[in-house]
Image 1 (spheres, rainbow, N blue to C red):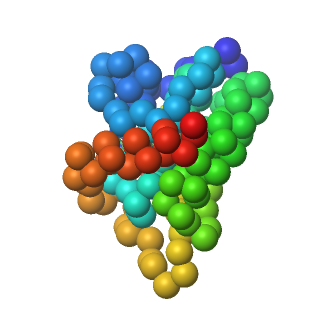
Image 2: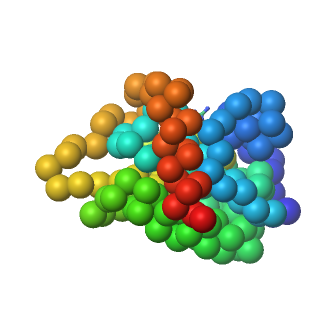
Length: 143
Ligand code: AMP
């Protein structure tokens, strides 16, 4: 572990990793977890997090950075297929000044289509039954 001095063990993604908070999971391996964003900016908005206590990229163990990139690539392909998305936006925000609101590093995987604007960031809670269905679509695309 590099440093977890500033890391808040009670942030919501740390709670999800400890299974103290619920999520709609789509993929998990030894080093990463992927689940649905509950305030999606587009249908299929998925998050990938490392199982490592890092606030942002600067705190992240390089091996976990690699694992995150690998999972993000795998999930981006599945999300693209599941939502028939012509484009996929990958975003990863570092620091409040960059717009980060949850301080456990994560990548956003967001389907994009021409002419459809993104919804506002972390604003509107989605219908949970719909998120469940979206998670199933992604899991099916993962095979
Ligand atoms: P960021 O602003 O890059 O830190 O993004 C945090 C993301 O986490 C936002 O897109 C939120 O909608 C999302 N989010 C916040 N709480 C939860 C939660 N409990 N489960 C899933 N996604 C969440």
